[in-house]
Length: 420
Image (cartoon, rainbow, N blue to C red; front, side, top):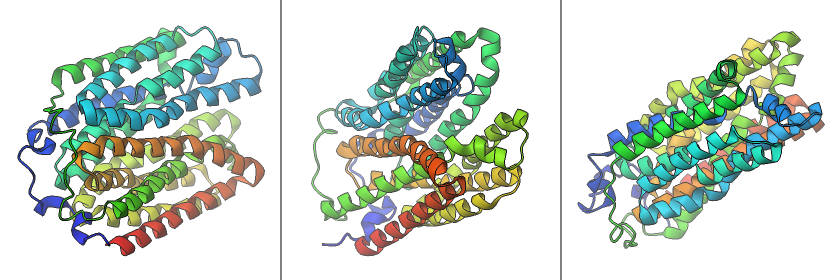
């Protein structure tokens, strides 16, 4: 049996149960959104600010060989995303069972403690273990998506998730900038204590100001399938396609990270300016996404998530291709900024659509799988991009990732045609 078209449209016409989770939390979700944006920004600033000085800290912990410094820096940086990819579905399931706020508090407190402990590491093994623990225990941004995705009204979910995405993107953009000057003021180890204190502030704000009306009896009970959701098996196929798409979004965005400095050097940038120009190009994508994420999320509320997903995938894939032919660094920065503007609509729209396809009592678990898919792409993207760049060529990284995005657009077109 095929899905009815109603299940794939904004659900404004579907009356909500007055006792449902969404209705009971209707008066809280905007305030919770503001706190979650602040907390996501704070935690991601703390996690990303070590990028400029991570190799220095690895060397400070006793690693001598330059090659080993690079290798251990990559392992330490990726360990957090790997940990989050493993545990996001588990925390999502617990959120369905015990409420979303406890998961936010757990993530904030856990990350504040672990971030401070990183400043006390005595070996590179301890550094990697603590970065992994930050991913396993933390995940404030992921927990925020679960809370806002389940509390926001369905007709506003795209906008809300877009705003939340802006907070996370801002944290990833500002973090390296903060990490560039903070060690000069407080030292490398002191920087981690500052980061832990920042997350502790977010934890306090979460405890004091986030509100949730969670009924463990009614909100954990499965509900009968709605009239506009007659075929759960078809929903599972759609969700699987959306998970693959979410993974590819982060894969495409991160695939250039290992080669960016080498690629910029080939564009004639002097060696003494390489790090600065590479940083500007990396930041361009996040800056572009900040500009358009809420607008594209709101557009998904108006015209449907699938239209935004397919359009953004196709345009982003096409923008990837000319990046292989640039001759100046500023051309690459401009194209990366444009790519950030188009790719920004994907994750909020995907999360909104996944949320619409599952019941309240399964939303946390499913959104947890979505987070796991995203972080998997964030881990796999740099690995595959580095291998393609090293063994095939730097230009081919753009061709491969652009082609994969266009393939994902075709996959989503096919899924829409088949199930709508």
